[in-house]
Length: 144
Image 1 (cartoon, rainbow, N blue to C red):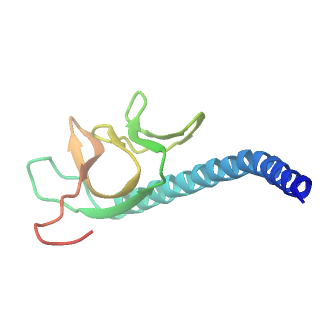
Image 2: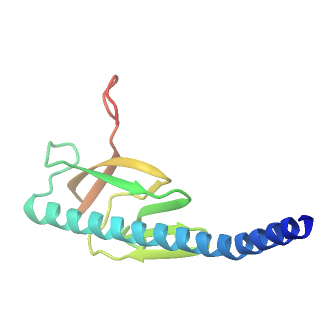
Image 3: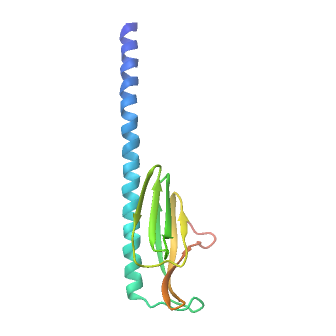
């Protein structure tokens, strides 16, 4: 009876030891796929927004779009990196990725895990169109 119990415990430990790395790999792959898809969707929405709206000077009112970006746990996203702030990059553990766009952002924004609402606005600075990114701050007393 004790021998059976010992064999069962050893077998359970071995199965757990084999299964945990596979589960961690699957979690990392899922986070990478979700992040890449979120950034592609963000890029496409930004391109559509810029195509259909004219840029204004920063001090003038202009078109605004609110976009929600969901960042998986353990992932960091940087919007607006590169020589012209045009790249979208992500990092999850040792995995890294990027989504290219030809739209330059006015500045770089770093986002960590969670749901983020961003305000996008096309502005004209020194004759160039840039997308201004700001984190949306909800009104007091609202949720989300």
